[in-house]
Picture 1 (cartoon, rainbow, N blue to C red):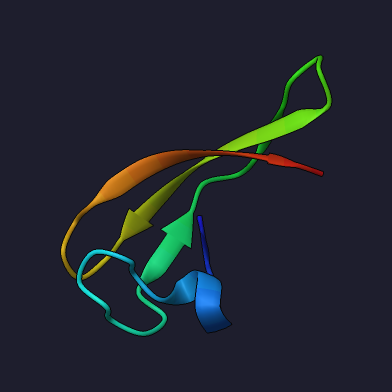
Picture 2: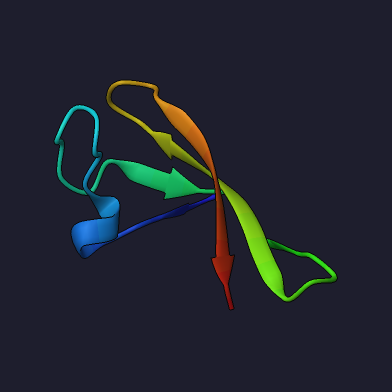
Length: 52
């Protein structure tokens, strides 16, 4: 897990600054990366999919 900084680190549910952490990313065969984002304050979690 690593803590996100800046705008990515702000939880979009509770608004707490630098509260988000993400899991280690995994690569998909289609060029996308996946990880899991968790807010350490409110406990909300979401999968993320993004281009590397």
